[in-house]
Length: 297
Ligand code: MN
Image 1 (cartoon, rainbow, N blue to C red):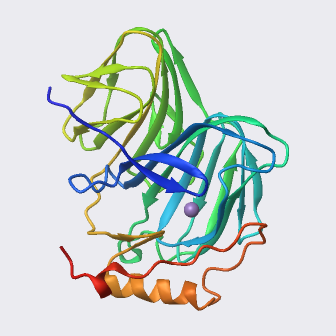
Image 2 (tube, rainbow, N blue to C red):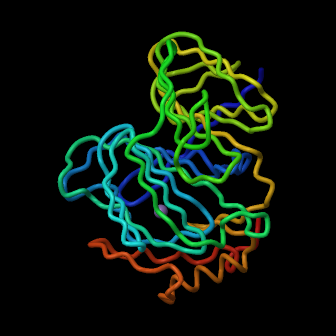
């Protein structure tokens, strides 16, 4: 079976260099998953963490999942939540929200995690992208232990267990901690799938993937075969192919440039749409719209 392996590119988020593997020119989404950053491993202190100041989102859900360390989430709904490995933060932006990721005040050590975005479906199709914002913290998630490793279900259902997190149907996200060896996992053939390697090296079909890389499996597979020479950790992402054309710009997911430009203007003007979050970090201004100064390539 043919598997494509993609390298991440580096980006700066707050005070962290991240390895971004979605979106990319040739692969915009995997199911509704539209963004994937791996943060660290890097050292943080009590007063210096991810350090991402208040910024807005719309039309998407953010998923924070840590392999190591602790981070602090704050948002305009009044949420203030520490997160540790094994726990899930799910923030639903809907029509608009603001959040910040700060140092914890208590934790010093290594921080390693991922932040993922899920594009919300259009309201006309029964989706929630124009709906109200929300925040969920799940202190525990269901997991399946087997002889090949441990499968923790972040989104949707896998191996007979269902995540309690509030995602739209047609999505799956699983953290997989593998022992050395070969395993075959069942997949929904109507889903598109990819695996992001967090630790170790794995062979997925005919591709070899290392930390930071994404192995793209596409649709139409009823199973996937993984070979780990040593222990490995990866994130399996999948879902029904996202049919709606997306316009992604900065922290916004929309359907048109007009819609994005409107949101950008509202954030710059301090419009009440996105709300406010108290933070010791500075509010992040929206950049200029690329397409005003540079026609679409
Ligand atoms: Mn954010």
